Image (cartoon, rainbow, N blue to C red):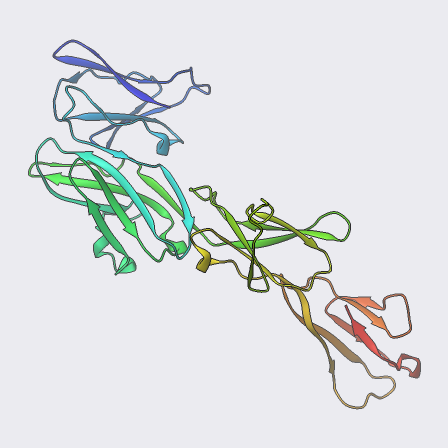
Length: 331
Protein backbone atom coordinates (compact mmCIF):
# COMPACT_ATOMS: atom_id res chain seq x y z
CA UNK A 1 0.00 0.00 0.00
CA UNK A 2 0.87 3.68 -0.06
CA UNK A 3 2.14 5.70 2.90
CA UNK A 4 2.87 9.41 3.27
CA UNK A 5 6.32 9.87 4.84
CA UNK A 6 6.91 13.20 6.60
CA UNK A 7 10.54 14.31 6.97
CA UNK A 8 12.34 17.56 7.68
CA UNK A 9 12.92 20.14 10.38
CA UNK A 10 10.60 21.81 12.84
CA UNK A 11 9.34 24.49 10.44
CA UNK A 12 9.14 22.98 6.96
CA UNK A 13 8.35 19.38 6.10
CA UNK A 14 8.91 17.27 2.99
CA UNK A 15 6.16 14.81 1.96
CA UNK A 16 6.89 11.61 0.04
CA UNK A 17 4.35 9.10 -1.25
CA UNK A 18 6.21 5.89 -0.45
CA UNK A 19 5.67 2.30 -1.57
CA UNK A 20 7.40 -0.91 -0.48
CA UNK A 21 8.57 -1.50 -4.07
CA UNK A 22 9.14 0.77 -7.08
CA UNK A 23 5.93 1.07 -9.08
CA UNK A 24 6.24 0.24 -12.78
CA UNK A 25 4.73 2.39 -15.58
CA UNK A 26 5.94 5.73 -14.11
CA UNK A 27 2.72 6.52 -12.27
CA UNK A 28 1.22 9.94 -11.67
CA UNK A 29 0.85 10.73 -7.97
CA UNK A 30 -2.17 12.61 -6.65
CA UNK A 31 -2.01 14.62 -3.44
CA UNK A 32 -4.87 15.47 -1.11
CA UNK A 33 -4.79 17.99 1.72
CA UNK A 34 -7.53 17.67 4.34
CA UNK A 35 -9.54 15.50 1.95
CA UNK A 36 -9.33 17.97 -0.95
CA UNK A 37 -7.53 17.30 -4.26
CA UNK A 38 -4.37 19.38 -4.21
CA UNK A 39 -1.96 18.48 -6.99
CA UNK A 40 -0.67 15.81 -9.40
CA UNK A 41 2.91 15.03 -10.38
CA UNK A 42 5.11 12.23 -11.70
CA UNK A 43 7.44 12.54 -8.71
CA UNK A 44 6.53 10.69 -5.51
CA UNK A 45 7.78 13.72 -3.58
CA UNK A 46 5.35 16.62 -3.12
CA UNK A 47 6.68 19.66 -5.01
CA UNK A 48 6.58 22.16 -2.12
CA UNK A 49 7.70 21.90 1.45
CA UNK A 50 4.73 22.26 3.79
CA UNK A 51 4.52 24.22 7.01
CA UNK A 52 4.33 22.35 10.31
CA UNK A 53 0.65 23.03 10.87
CA UNK A 54 -0.98 20.96 13.61
CA UNK A 55 -4.36 21.04 11.82
CA UNK A 56 -3.42 19.64 8.39
CA UNK A 57 -3.30 16.08 7.09
CA UNK A 58 -2.10 14.80 3.72
CA UNK A 59 -2.88 11.69 1.70
CA UNK A 60 -1.58 10.42 -1.65
CA UNK A 61 -2.84 8.09 -4.38
CA UNK A 62 -1.78 6.80 -7.78
CA UNK A 63 -3.82 8.06 -10.74
CA UNK A 64 -6.20 5.37 -11.96
CA UNK A 65 -6.28 3.79 -8.48
CA UNK A 66 -7.60 6.71 -6.47
CA UNK A 67 -9.67 4.42 -4.24
CA UNK A 68 -6.41 2.84 -2.98
CA UNK A 69 -5.14 6.09 -1.45
CA UNK A 70 -2.86 6.18 1.58
CA UNK A 71 -4.20 6.87 5.08
CA UNK A 72 -4.29 10.59 5.94
CA UNK A 73 -1.17 11.57 7.93
CA UNK A 74 -0.68 14.55 10.25
CA UNK A 75 2.17 16.91 9.38
CA UNK A 76 2.75 17.68 13.06
CA UNK A 77 1.45 15.82 16.12
CA UNK A 78 -1.55 13.49 16.04
CA UNK A 79 -4.54 15.81 16.46
CA UNK A 80 -4.92 16.97 12.84
CA UNK A 81 -8.15 16.87 10.85
CA UNK A 82 -8.52 13.47 9.25
CA UNK A 83 -10.98 10.81 8.11
CA UNK A 84 -10.12 7.09 7.91
CA UNK A 85 -12.52 4.69 6.19
CA UNK A 86 -12.91 1.23 7.74
CA UNK A 87 -13.34 -0.55 4.38
CA UNK A 88 -12.69 0.65 0.82
CA UNK A 89 -15.07 -1.82 -0.87
CA UNK A 90 -18.22 -3.59 0.32
CA UNK A 91 -20.44 -6.02 -1.63
CA UNK A 92 -23.80 -6.95 -0.08
CA UNK A 93 -27.13 -8.48 -1.02
CA UNK A 94 -30.06 -6.56 -2.41
CA UNK A 95 -32.72 -6.23 0.31
CA UNK A 96 -30.21 -6.52 3.18
CA UNK A 97 -28.71 -3.88 5.50
CA UNK A 98 -25.18 -2.45 5.32
CA UNK A 99 -23.01 -0.52 7.77
CA UNK A 100 -20.38 1.77 6.19
CA UNK A 101 -18.09 3.34 8.75
CA UNK A 102 -15.14 5.65 9.27
CA UNK A 103 -13.31 7.28 12.14
CA UNK A 104 -12.63 11.01 12.09
CA UNK A 105 -10.75 13.58 14.11
CA UNK A 106 -11.41 17.33 13.98
CA UNK A 107 -8.78 19.76 15.26
CA UNK A 108 -11.56 22.03 16.50
CA UNK A 109 -14.94 20.87 17.79
CA UNK A 110 -17.27 19.63 15.06
CA UNK A 111 -20.42 21.56 14.17
CA UNK A 112 -21.86 19.07 11.65
CA UNK A 113 -21.02 15.78 9.94
CA UNK A 114 -22.72 13.67 7.27
CA UNK A 115 -22.32 11.02 4.55
CA UNK A 116 -22.93 11.71 0.86
CA UNK A 117 -22.71 9.99 -2.54
CA UNK A 118 -19.67 10.98 -4.59
CA UNK A 119 -21.71 11.03 -7.84
CA UNK A 120 -23.76 14.04 -6.71
CA UNK A 121 -22.46 17.35 -8.09
CA UNK A 122 -22.71 18.93 -4.64
CA UNK A 123 -22.49 16.86 -1.46
CA UNK A 124 -25.98 16.18 -0.13
CA UNK A 125 -26.62 14.74 3.33
CA UNK A 126 -28.06 11.25 2.72
CA UNK A 127 -30.59 11.70 5.53
CA UNK A 128 -32.15 14.47 3.41
CA UNK A 129 -32.07 12.56 0.11
CA UNK A 130 -35.62 11.46 -0.89
CA UNK A 131 -34.18 8.32 -2.56
CA UNK A 132 -33.07 7.10 0.89
CA UNK A 133 -36.10 8.28 2.88
CA UNK A 134 -36.67 6.06 5.91
CA UNK A 135 -33.69 3.83 5.01
CA UNK A 136 -30.71 5.77 6.39
CA UNK A 137 -29.43 6.41 9.90
CA UNK A 138 -26.16 7.60 11.43
CA UNK A 139 -24.69 6.15 14.61
CA UNK A 140 -21.44 6.82 16.38
CA UNK A 141 -19.47 9.29 18.37
CA UNK A 142 -16.66 11.72 17.78
CA UNK A 143 -13.31 9.87 17.46
CA UNK A 144 -15.20 6.56 17.49
CA UNK A 145 -16.52 4.78 14.41
CA UNK A 146 -19.12 6.96 12.71
CA UNK A 147 -21.47 4.64 10.84
CA UNK A 148 -23.86 5.06 7.94
CA UNK A 149 -26.53 2.33 8.00
CA UNK A 150 -28.65 1.78 4.87
CA UNK A 151 -31.54 -0.70 5.09
CA UNK A 152 -33.59 -2.44 2.38
CA UNK A 153 -30.73 -2.06 -0.12
CA UNK A 154 -31.49 -1.55 -3.81
CA UNK A 155 -29.20 -2.03 -6.79
CA UNK A 156 -29.32 1.73 -7.44
CA UNK A 157 -27.70 2.26 -4.01
CA UNK A 158 -24.46 0.96 -5.58
CA UNK A 159 -22.17 4.00 -5.37
CA UNK A 160 -19.15 5.43 -3.61
CA UNK A 161 -19.96 6.99 -0.23
CA UNK A 162 -17.88 9.71 1.39
CA UNK A 163 -17.94 11.41 4.77
CA UNK A 164 -17.39 15.06 5.60
CA UNK A 165 -17.46 17.20 8.73
CA UNK A 166 -17.37 20.89 9.56
CA UNK A 167 -15.97 22.98 12.39
CA UNK A 168 -16.47 26.72 12.81
CA UNK A 169 -13.69 27.56 10.34
CA UNK A 170 -12.97 24.31 8.47
CA UNK A 171 -14.68 21.75 6.23
CA UNK A 172 -13.19 18.34 5.36
CA UNK A 173 -12.68 18.12 1.58
CA UNK A 174 -15.00 16.20 -0.73
CA UNK A 175 -12.55 14.69 -3.23
CA UNK A 176 -10.79 11.93 -1.25
CA UNK A 177 -12.43 8.60 -2.24
CA UNK A 178 -14.40 6.80 0.48
CA UNK A 179 -16.11 3.39 0.51
CA UNK A 180 -17.49 1.85 -2.69
CA UNK A 181 -20.71 -0.11 -2.14
CA UNK A 182 -21.89 -2.73 -4.64
CA UNK A 183 -25.38 -4.21 -4.23
CA UNK A 184 -26.10 -7.57 -5.90
CA UNK A 185 -28.91 -10.06 -6.27
CA UNK A 186 -28.46 -13.84 -6.40
CA UNK A 187 -28.85 -15.83 -9.61
CA UNK A 188 -28.53 -19.55 -10.34
CA UNK A 189 -26.48 -20.33 -13.46
CA UNK A 190 -26.95 -23.77 -15.05
CA UNK A 191 -24.08 -25.43 -16.95
CA UNK A 192 -23.76 -28.99 -18.30
CA UNK A 193 -21.42 -31.18 -16.23
CA UNK A 194 -20.41 -34.83 -16.65
CA UNK A 195 -22.71 -37.14 -18.61
CA UNK A 196 -26.25 -36.92 -17.28
CA UNK A 197 -25.50 -34.15 -14.78
CA UNK A 198 -25.64 -30.36 -14.59
CA UNK A 199 -23.90 -27.91 -12.30
CA UNK A 200 -25.85 -25.13 -10.59
CA UNK A 201 -23.80 -22.11 -9.49
CA UNK A 202 -25.11 -19.38 -7.21
CA UNK A 203 -23.66 -16.22 -8.76
CA UNK A 204 -23.43 -12.56 -7.74
CA UNK A 205 -22.23 -9.49 -9.65
CA UNK A 206 -19.53 -8.80 -7.02
CA UNK A 207 -17.76 -10.94 -4.42
CA UNK A 208 -19.80 -10.85 -1.20
CA UNK A 209 -17.79 -9.18 1.56
CA UNK A 210 -18.34 -11.54 4.47
CA UNK A 211 -17.40 -14.83 2.73
CA UNK A 212 -20.86 -16.33 3.24
CA UNK A 213 -22.11 -19.89 3.59
CA UNK A 214 -24.51 -20.77 0.78
CA UNK A 215 -27.85 -22.52 1.20
CA UNK A 216 -29.63 -24.52 -1.50
CA UNK A 217 -33.37 -25.17 -1.83
CA UNK A 218 -35.02 -27.96 -3.82
CA UNK A 219 -38.73 -27.39 -4.57
CA UNK A 220 -38.74 -24.78 -1.79
CA UNK A 221 -37.26 -27.14 0.83
CA UNK A 222 -33.81 -26.46 2.26
CA UNK A 223 -31.18 -29.06 1.36
CA UNK A 224 -29.29 -29.84 4.53
CA UNK A 225 -26.63 -32.33 5.35
CA UNK A 226 -24.75 -31.11 8.42
CA UNK A 227 -21.96 -33.68 7.98
CA UNK A 228 -21.15 -32.62 4.44
CA UNK A 229 -19.85 -29.51 2.71
CA UNK A 230 -21.93 -30.44 -0.32
CA UNK A 231 -24.71 -27.93 0.30
CA UNK A 232 -22.73 -25.00 1.75
CA UNK A 233 -20.67 -24.01 -1.30
CA UNK A 234 -21.92 -21.89 -4.18
CA UNK A 235 -22.12 -24.90 -6.54
CA UNK A 236 -24.45 -27.90 -6.60
CA UNK A 237 -24.39 -30.86 -8.99
CA UNK A 238 -27.79 -32.34 -9.90
CA UNK A 239 -29.10 -34.91 -12.38
CA UNK A 240 -29.41 -33.51 -15.89
CA UNK A 241 -32.99 -34.69 -16.40
CA UNK A 242 -34.15 -33.43 -12.98
CA UNK A 243 -37.57 -31.76 -13.12
CA UNK A 244 -37.14 -30.20 -9.65
CA UNK A 245 -36.79 -26.49 -9.06
CA UNK A 246 -33.68 -25.13 -7.30
CA UNK A 247 -32.81 -21.79 -5.73
CA UNK A 248 -30.00 -20.50 -3.51
CA UNK A 249 -29.55 -18.09 -0.61
CA UNK A 250 -26.81 -17.18 1.86
CA UNK A 251 -26.83 -17.84 5.59
CA UNK A 252 -28.50 -15.17 7.76
CA UNK A 253 -30.30 -13.85 4.65
CA UNK A 254 -32.53 -16.83 3.91
CA UNK A 255 -35.40 -14.56 2.89
CA UNK A 256 -33.34 -13.05 0.03
CA UNK A 257 -33.04 -16.17 -2.11
CA UNK A 258 -32.53 -16.26 -5.87
CA UNK A 259 -35.30 -16.86 -8.42
CA UNK A 260 -35.79 -20.63 -8.86
CA UNK A 261 -34.45 -22.50 -11.88
CA UNK A 262 -36.42 -25.45 -13.22
CA UNK A 263 -36.67 -27.66 -16.29
CA UNK A 264 -39.43 -27.03 -18.84
CA UNK A 265 -42.94 -27.91 -17.67
CA UNK A 266 -46.46 -27.36 -19.03
CA UNK A 267 -45.13 -27.67 -22.58
CA UNK A 268 -47.90 -27.06 -25.10
CA UNK A 269 -48.41 -26.59 -28.85
CA UNK A 270 -50.69 -24.01 -30.44
CA UNK A 271 -51.87 -24.17 -34.07
CA UNK A 272 -52.51 -21.18 -36.32
CA UNK A 273 -54.87 -20.93 -38.06
CA UNK A 274 -56.96 -23.24 -35.89
CA UNK A 275 -59.75 -25.39 -37.25
CA UNK A 276 -59.78 -27.38 -40.47
CA UNK A 277 -56.71 -27.25 -42.70
CA UNK A 278 -57.13 -27.37 -46.49
CA UNK A 279 -54.59 -28.83 -48.90
CA UNK A 280 -52.22 -26.24 -50.35
CA UNK A 281 -52.52 -23.90 -47.37
CA UNK A 282 -49.96 -23.25 -44.61
CA UNK A 283 -50.04 -23.83 -40.89
CA UNK A 284 -47.80 -22.60 -38.05
CA UNK A 285 -47.17 -24.75 -34.98
CA UNK A 286 -45.80 -22.88 -31.94
CA UNK A 287 -44.27 -24.54 -28.89
CA UNK A 288 -44.41 -22.89 -25.48
CA UNK A 289 -43.26 -23.97 -22.04
CA UNK A 290 -42.65 -22.65 -18.56
CA UNK A 291 -38.95 -22.88 -17.68
CA UNK A 292 -36.23 -20.86 -15.98
CA UNK A 293 -33.88 -20.21 -17.66
CA UNK A 294 -36.24 -20.06 -20.66
CA UNK A 295 -35.87 -22.76 -23.31
CA UNK A 296 -33.59 -21.56 -26.11
CA UNK A 297 -33.85 -24.64 -28.33
CA UNK A 298 -37.02 -26.48 -29.39
CA UNK A 299 -37.07 -29.55 -31.64
CA UNK A 300 -40.13 -30.72 -33.60
CA UNK A 301 -41.06 -34.36 -34.22
CA UNK A 302 -43.84 -36.15 -36.05
CA UNK A 303 -45.28 -39.19 -34.28
CA UNK A 304 -43.77 -42.50 -35.48
CA UNK A 305 -41.01 -40.63 -37.39
CA UNK A 306 -37.64 -40.91 -35.64
CA UNK A 307 -35.73 -38.01 -37.20
CA UNK A 308 -36.69 -34.47 -36.15
CA UNK A 309 -38.74 -32.40 -38.60
CA UNK A 310 -37.47 -28.95 -37.57
CA UNK A 311 -35.97 -26.85 -34.79
CA UNK A 312 -37.06 -23.51 -33.36
CA UNK A 313 -40.02 -22.32 -31.34
CA UNK A 314 -42.28 -22.26 -34.41
CA UNK A 315 -42.61 -24.84 -37.19
CA UNK A 316 -44.28 -23.69 -40.42
CA UNK A 317 -45.65 -26.32 -42.80
CA UNK A 318 -46.33 -24.77 -46.21
CA UNK A 319 -48.27 -26.05 -49.20
CA UNK A 320 -49.86 -28.83 -47.15
CA UNK A 321 -50.50 -32.23 -48.76
CA UNK A 322 -52.28 -35.29 -47.36
CA UNK A 323 -48.96 -36.92 -46.28
CA UNK A 324 -48.52 -34.10 -43.75
CA UNK A 325 -51.47 -35.42 -41.78
CA UNK A 326 -50.49 -36.73 -38.31
CA UNK A 327 -49.56 -35.85 -34.76
CA UNK A 328 -46.73 -33.38 -34.07
CA UNK A 329 -44.98 -32.65 -30.80
CA UNK A 330 -42.08 -30.51 -29.59
CA UNK A 331 -39.29 -31.09 -27.05
